[in-house]
Image (cartoon, rainbow, N blue to C red; front, side, top):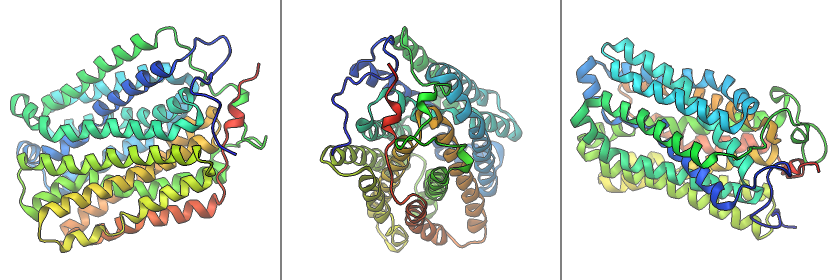
Length: 431
């Protein structure tokens, strides 16, 4: 039996709700993804403009590792609150609160003169941008019918990837005109513009997404999804997220530095290889989302689809340590794109599993707890990376861990969640 509703115009929410057409659904989600580009812009700004910031503030590799660490910890701790917030106040108010606060935090970098000013701004940005992940998953669970959610995650990641691809090209241009602080102010302005457009399209729309609705707190077998910290399903998801995200944050933050140290690239020369990496990221997510939807339509079970995509994604990351044996740069750049594709296929599947097994009223909290664990994994890998590089060990130990991390994550998830069952019966509103 196929895991597919009868049509693309399935009602989402109570009968008196203003209909959300397929076109409006994609417009709202697309603008949320664009806001996410500006949300995440601070990280490539810091990574790409690291030499400029180092010259300005006199920072070392250890200083940057510590900066990345405190940002990750701030984001991670905030996830403990933002998931509850998104479930409590819903998509509309979360969008307003999230974009407003993280845009202001990005713009605060414009007044950073001393090193501690940058640290304070980064902590504020890490804390406020934590709304993005639970908001995105909650939006997909609210706006899209179950069989389209994987594809929506793929499209969203592809949009983010397009934004990331362009950043190595235009960030140096912005920095040449306004400096590295100006690049972060630009991110904040972009966030406010996107929010205004989203609110214009969302006028009059009611989102059926509040945690108080008891109809959205039961799994497909009629049993309630209990307190998230006591749920086996929760721990299956969040530990897998922690293991896999450690590799994502390692590559996301340190790839430009790896290219500089191993191949002597300048800031201007980073644009194309970083674009290749993030093109792989977007393409991998889009393909994994499309394939997941097609397999579900073909009658595959949810369990088989999710774990097949995750295993394939993990397998293509395994050769990562071998890039250190290559003398030619461009095969390394292409391999990094493949690794990023593998990560996004794996990550997309984890987010899809959340919408499969978690009632809509708790999607924000479970997503945020998973993101908290992912950021803690990211924070830990930043400290380890700084220590490994300072000890002169290079990237070899780090890439070996990265190669194994996804298989470990999949093994853990399968152990705790041997059979993934979809929660969509709980999402049928009462009439």
